[in-house]
Length: 340
Image (cartoon, rainbow, N blue to C red; front, side, top):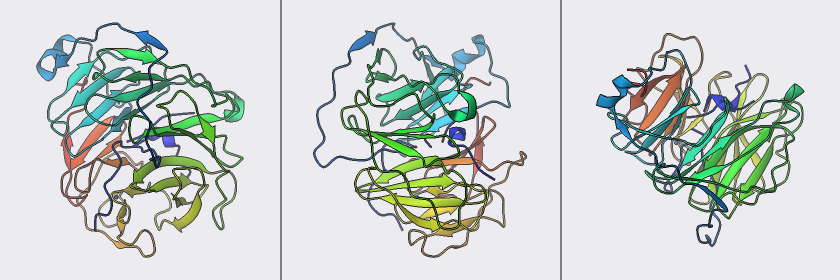
């Protein structure tokens, strides 16, 4: 079953990972440039102050009903951001035990997010989807003070063609945005100036044996290696880039047809949907084997999974969140902020 990336690392997303090198700072990822440039100066700022609210104060706010949508960005072992119902933004510095609510900029029913630490990140409110995912506008806002203020960036290089379905930043300057239309090859746009200007690389090649268009589900960066999970009509495929996301090569076809690939490290990947059916590779997809986990859920849909480091990760389904602190073996439910 083809999975849209918008169920998102980026853990993901609703648009249309033995440990190796240190993982990227965001749940959905971006590529590093050989010589990072300085953080760009925003062109236009929205300086509305954003008061925070601890979990004890959330009872006075309107509660978000479940099931719903919760997109997560986990830039480290302790920090995780949650965009719930595409409208309310929360930050946790203790792996989701407690949350602070931040006031985001103006959002749309389809919004992407990516954070690189506990204070800097981007939100991308997207326009409505044109017929056949032929068009969708892209806007971008940036914060460097945990959401107290937001800057609306003037973006160039990303045309309205295709649906935008993942956004990932690795550091203050380097980021990736992917786009697709379900019939042609996905496009990966890259920025090296914090999101103001973007350029597209070569078209992503078709996976062996796949038919129809591919959709980028998630992207992560580990050192000089960028990894992407692409969904086809019947399988999930791992792709690799060694040049910051400009070119991509097919790496592997995952064993579980319907389950997303969770990149825990550069070489350790997981597919988790239910006990007895989970798979793991520790050699970058060369071989896969069964993986013992107690993860389980009531909803009959695959979870969206993202890891903040080699041990701490999160799985989301219809707004519900589960957490692991041992690399995916054991999971426990944590409360979705804004719903309690």
